[in-house]
Image (cartoon, rainbow, N blue to C red; front, side):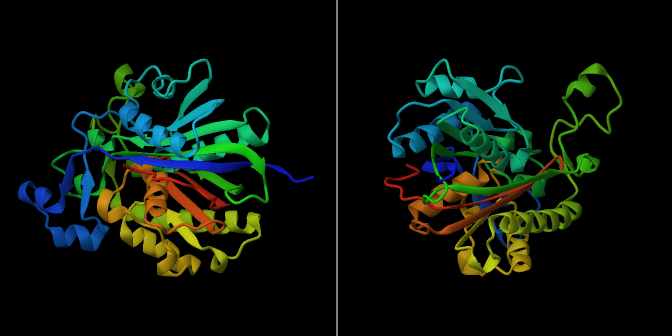
Length: 335
């Protein structure tokens, strides 16, 4: 008997309307278009003015559900670091806006690795027969956590959302999720963090500083990102019984272009197999991977049966990878 599996049935993405090119940042920060493109691989990003995490997640989810033919849902899992409110979670509101009530809906926070963790959760719910259909979302308005005067982080991050619909199916179907690898290293909390505003800060307990904006050790992030994404990718490929050379499309977290190229080079994956949309949207945190897949689908870069590898790392530090084949999908993932 063929093994039960979670199968991708739809993909969707959304970004805010406001596009911020490098030239706009160069007008107010000590930077240039050339510096941002050379160091980060980014030409522009979308920055929210009036679209919240729930707004963007709802739009991306609606696109994915439309592609999947709508129908019943059992669970909604939202990966985000920027919920609309500290309490409650944002997933139930997204779910209600999409027209579903009475079903399970919850948030997952693993920052830039959040979507892979949410995808693993959806996979486990379906394989464990606790759900037949799951909407997995990644959405962040991370620019709200970025110091607008910091030329590095203001250049890196953008806002957006992405989504995949999963349904119960069989392991040999195109679109079936195959294997996962998840990990973390909590000794590296200070490598990437927003130190102010949390429970410790509110309680008056000792904190490194009270900065409400993201602080990041760039060189340390680069070194660990390449190492952990490479290692996690190798482990998940081994679990699936795949060679790196057999991967048709590599869709890593869109951190920066040097990290992406570094991981691909370590794995031996050719540049023409790497999926990127970094130049147009920047690093959209939990939205990064599903938004890249949505854009690749719309560009015709994903074909039925192709082997796909995704990998990510985020603050925590947390990382995760997954492998699956691409399904046959009709329709556009983005407006």
